[in-house]
Length: 208
Image (cartoon, rainbow, N blue to C red):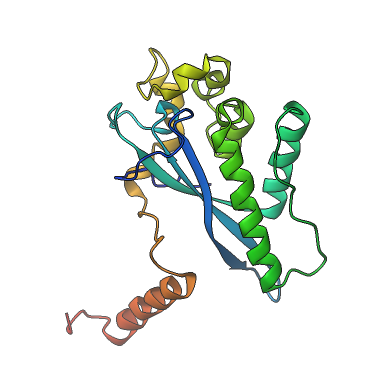
């Protein structure tokens, strides 16, 4: 699994008390062989927490990255939160259906968006090891975040000894492309097709 591209952003973190914003702005359909395929929901993470940054980021930087998850992965995460934090008031999980249509996908995206917004507003859930694992940060430094005082969640500075472990997950970020939030999936596919077509029509690069 490739690491997400963690980029510095000019966005402001809305949940100042947790230092973390989670939304689900879009989804994408992943086609498999023959008629198979599945839907992935793209979670936008905007945060100033040190655990999500690399060594090159400054303490005051706000970073953002995308994480794609299938329904089953979000369902598993939801069940873990429900079991470990029974006092947390989470919105209901979207219902399971045998065949997923376009309207079901849109409904699921909206409900996942509501659930994750709720998680990011809750100081306990926003710093939980379950969430950090769900978003891909499994280091010892990351897991320890939940045990700190909630006020420490607002501190984006890295803790002594944490940097090497907590940042391994994002080592390959410089090789990654930035999120294409401004483009629809069709636009991205179209641009890729156009690039491939250009290569096919002009293999020697004469036209450039």
